[in-house]
Image 1 (cartoon, one colour):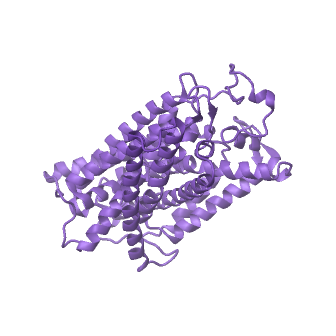
Image 2: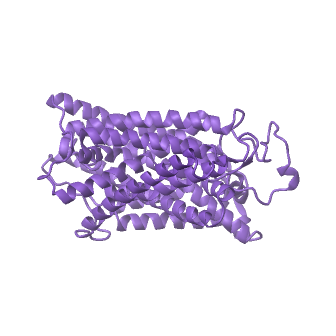
Image 3: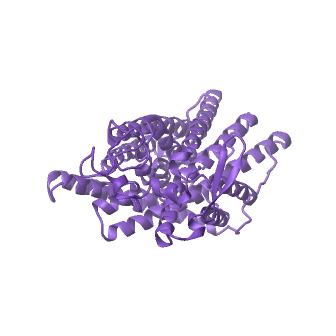
Length: 485
């Protein structure tokens, strides 16, 4: 944290204002081929970043999603999304370097890759979609964290007063608590300095996923039956129209649960070489998606087996489980800790983008450049940058206020998944891969890639429609800042 703030911002996100000598420097013990300090990331740190990003709050909605689709379509759709994400992520890893995969010019961010390979208006479109998606994820994670904190309060209330007590709790206070925590952590200057937070968050994600899985298995063992049907929630429990909209929304929930393409290039930029960053990132992607898919299948399917059509929208906070209350508290505490880290993993690209643009626009500004050394006993001084402090604090406050206005977990998750899935996970990786590999137009490979992209677009549209319908339904009974459970 002791480096100049502007240098931290530029270091992993854009090569500008760097001397010719530094840019032409050959790789050495201290510097990489782009003249920047040696990258230290490995397959394990990359995997921890991916797992932190992927096994997020989305895992908790999977039992509900499978309940809408049934035993046949539910697991099949989940497996299909895992294959799509692995394939498109593999295409995207090829775009980290423009031209030669070993010595080509590095792209430090997703937008850098789009700019160097596609260029033109597509860069602006990509930037708008990417940063809106990251902004939306920050809101979704704030909502999810507050719900888990409320669940701990309600779990203790149910334990002390009985399961028939309503034990209402308000989400606003918990959103504020989460926001204050994120203001503190958002002062970590750069992506590579949050590796430890990613590892802690990845451990937490395994913790609560395992607890959710264990509780599902225990409930199935206690009842001795696997609930659910082959086709999902039945007509009668919901109307024909609701069944359709819910099925569409389930697609969005599953898409959100796998979403991480938006930060893949940033993660790849932390990896040391040789071997090539592309090789390591592909291995990290395969390992991470294999692990997350296994967990998703187990948690989603066991949750559906335990509750059937009554599967809650959030497995650990919908109170399908009441006991052991202390285990629920541990699981929800793990969710909150994980989301603190995941929020940072997704927001660091936004922070870096704004700070890079500010440094370019006002290169001599004292507010942007100047830092104050704050002594921290045992850790050395922390360099406080006023622009970083004010802008990042304002960002967190904004996401917190919007979360208090729209606290619909399942619907927000579905919209985010649908909105980000096709353009960021499929369209741009496919288009960049075609451009990078110079695949001839109308060749069989070009046609297959275009058909694949078009099919994913259709899925995104129907998922968005289902989630928007869900939000419209929620808004009928909604009062701002007064949401309680």
